[in-house]
Every structure is written in C-alpha cells, then in structure tokens.
Image (cartoon, rainbow, N blue to C red; front, side, top):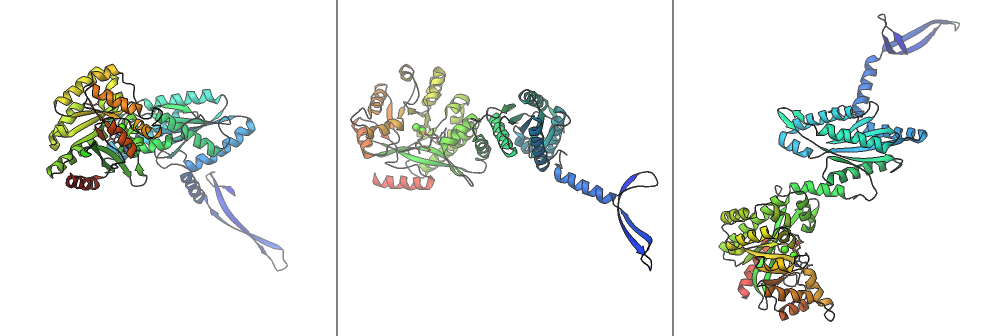
Length: 482
Ligand code: C2E
Ligand code: CA
Ligand code: CA
C-alpha cells in the first residue's frame, strides 16, 4: 500500500495485518507489520529498464522495440493508421573502429543516437539493435511522405561532421523502410523487408534511403557480407593461385600457364572468381587484389625459373577496371624488378572492354609494356564489341578465343559449328597475332583447332588449373616427357 511519511513524501510499503483475539473470540488487537519497499521497487524498475535498454546509448533495445512495435501494430490496426519501420546502418562504421579504436566507435554511436532522437518527434521510437544498427518506428498517416521527410532529415543529420577526440569524422547511413499495412502485416515481415531495403540502399552506394519493393534483391545482404569478407581475404591469407597449362599445337609442348585466383574461405568454402572478381571491381578492391596476384605470380614464376623448371610465360588476368584506373606500367615495372622475373616471362590477359574504352590510351600503354618485353593477350575474344579497325591498330601478341566458341565446335559440326573459332584464327593471323583457344574439353575440339592452324590451346582436356605443388609436379613430368 501507499503511505505518507512524516515529511509528506509518499512511499510503497508491504504490510501484513494479523488479528489478535481474546478468550471468547472477540478481536482484541490488530497487529500490523510493515516494511518500506521503495528500494526494492526502485531496483525492480532499474532492472526492467536495463533489460529493455541499450547500455551504451540508453536507447530502447531489441526486446523493447519488439513489444513496442507489436503494440503499435495493434493500435494502428484499430485506428486505421500506418506504421513505418526504418532500418539504419552506418556506412563503413567498421573503418572507424579499425582505425580510431573502439573508444571512438562508442562515442560515434552515442552521438549518432542523440542525432537520431533529435530527428524524430518525441513519441516516435528510436532503438538500437546492436553494433551500428538502429531502428526508427513512426506511426500516423501519409506515411510515405512523412517517412521520406524523416529519412532525409536523418541522412542530413548524420552527414554533418562528428567531433571525436581530435578527429573530425564524417559518416553516412543507409536506410531501409517498410510500411504497415502497405508492405506487410506482421512485425517479422516488416523487420525483414526494412532490412532488405537497407541492404539495397547500401548496395547502390549508401548515404540514402529506400522503401521496400518486392523485386529488391534479397541477396543484397549476402553480397554485402561477402564484400566485407573479401576485404580481409589478403590479410587472412585466404587467396591462393592456381595454374593452368597452355600448350602449343600440334606438338603439345608447354608454353606457359594462366594464373587463376582462388578464394578459399574457412566457413564459406570455395568462392568462385567469377563471383568475387566482379565484386572486387564494384567495391574498388580490385587494385589491391590485382597487385597481390601479380606480385605473387611473378615471385612464384621467378622461383620456378631459378629451380630450373621451365614454366614459360605466365598469364596474369588484369580486369578492365584495374587496367583503366591504376598505374599498370609502373606496377608491372616494380614487380618485375622486385621479383627478378624476366619481362619475357610475363603475359597480361586483358579483356576487350579494357582496351576499347579509350583505345588510344590503351594502345600507347600496351606499346610501352611490349617494349619492355611483356606479352599482351586479348582475353575472351568475341564476347565484346571491339571493332576490327580498333583491333587492327592494337599492339597485341595473342588473341584468346572465348571458350563459348570452342564449345560450339563439337555440337554443330554440320551447321556452322566452329565457324567463329575458325574465323578468329584466320583474322588473328591476318593481323599478325598468335591465337590461343581456351576451354578445350574434347578431342574433337582439339582436332578442329589443329586443322585450322590454331597456335596454342588450354583447357580441361589437357589439364585443369592446379595449385602450386601439383603444377610443379606437372612441370617436372612435362620436362621428362619432352
Ligand atoms: P577467364 O580469364 O576466362 O579464365 C578461364 C576460366 O575458364 C577459368 O575459370 C578456368 O578455370 C576455366 N577453364 C579453363 N579450362 C576450361 C575448360 O576446359 N572447361 C571449362 N568449363 N572451364 C575451363 P576460373 O578460374 O573460375 O576463372 C573465372 C574468371 O575469373 C576468369 O575467366 C577471369 O575472368 C577471372 N579471374 C580469375 N583469376 C583472376 C585474377 O587473378 N584476376 C582477375 N582480374 N580476374 C581473374
Ligand atoms: Ca583469362
Ligand atoms: Ca577467358
């Protein structure tokens, strides 16, 4: 019961009352026994608060958010209102933690929480899910307009610089929005949709908001995770180089090997370069990764040559973006110098996109590289749209017939199967280039290529890409056979 102290303050007390009776059963006394339980009540409230709030920022936590959102949906249903759930994630928060330490990261989160609170009305909810993830819940009408306005306010609020220690930090946030009842009717679905929309906002560059749409890539989440894992792959030594032999025909002597990058992740297993190379390109990591490949491939080849293993030339793939945006000439120079690999033993495999984007610049860069003795191959030839006029003036050593045109050979011999492969060989020779066919898998394909005077071949029919040791054994065997 509630009682009043002498100083007039009110307090809760726990009271037990018992009856004391006389001989005949009549009531003689009431015996009251009481304890002031205000400290228990306080503790209980504190515990409840702690259980429902995030210790760092003081914002409601996931548990609190869930009960609140559940209630909001009930009320909204009764009042025919809308509810909006916004998922927020700071862009590149990890960088702050990594470079300035967790202390600075914590301060950034606290200040972010403050700015979020100040961006919404008092009765809107801002919660922290953990890490750099926050959720905002709004209720009312005209939610598309309201949510857009609030999201834009938040975006601007978080864009203005943070002062932490002596640093001035700039952050940005990606926001995903889901609406009740427009997008979904249940809390679980709303959370999932807002999350998907958030990853979508992030994947298109961040620093912005997106409303959930059914056609959003539900895999955006996975992609972002992969992007983050890729970031650490070099340091954690998850990359390995594989080597696939290239042979001259018809004598089938080894002339070189293509270097193919492999990413072996301890949990995710083998991840194909067809997946992670494009990802590395769009996330600006291809420069670092390409450099790692070039350095390690040249080091390995140089080592083989020192051991007397005749590896020939090694073909390193250079992605279009790497070719267009890095100082390739200097990089190659420096790597050859530091690894001691003769320039003649290095071939760069470029795609048509790389050389045709700005053909004149490409031509002079290739010319400079070739002057040093480095070989240039045009990869996946036939897939792109290089005009023959451009091709004619391009300083190349080799055309690489795309595997698709090689696979075309066995299927439709009678009806034009292999015509493109044959034409490419003719064209390449006419322009003074050598021609190599990749993806050769069958004897029929090989016979066709030999008949059409293709210079070199590469493919599973001869050997698959192999890790270092297996390729060394291959080299040794090949030496004996010759
Ligand atoms: P690519 O340059 O066209 O490489 C040839 C691909 O065909 C390789 O796939 C190789 O393993 C595969 N291959 C070779 N012979 C055969 C065959 O007979 N049959 C079939 N079905 N496939 C064959 P991989 O290693 O998965 O590489 C895929 C792509 O990833 C490469 O295509 C290349 O574009 C890229 N890539 C791989 N390593 C690197 C790298 O170090 N740097 C860059 N920039 N790109 C790389
Ligand atoms: Ca290649
Ligand atoms: Ca290729």
